[in-house]
Image 1 (tube, helix red, strand yellow):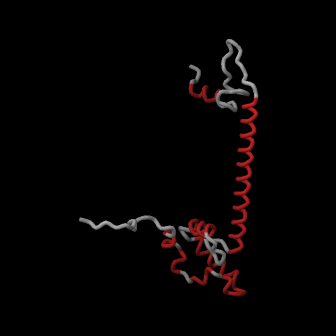
Image 2: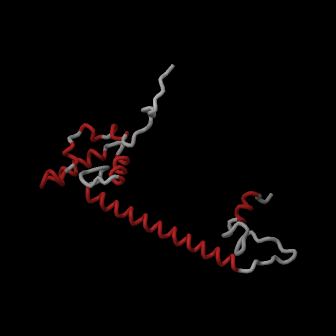
Length: 154
């Protein structure tokens, strides 16, 4: 009978499995930290980026560098300043998206309050429900094209 273990099998993907396929695996680590090279730093950084350009896992490497605080060196084909700029842009974009979502949520809540406080419209006798325009059953004029697509004229 096989012996049971309280540990998960070692077949689950690890967070850094991409590192095994990295083009820089056999390269000199000093190449990826150009600040250590003084005046030759720009040339060394370009050489490191050339290695990254051929790397099959460059996206995963950059994602790692942006997720974790990798502030030094070349990661994912970007230098320190380039990653800092990209990180700031991503944060700004995230804040803007959160602000837009909050405004939509507040507008939806205000609209719901207005609708709840307004007296209910009573349909006239013999009138059919509207499929588009204000008071539409589906909303925003989407019902008519959907109905036409579902029931094309013969």
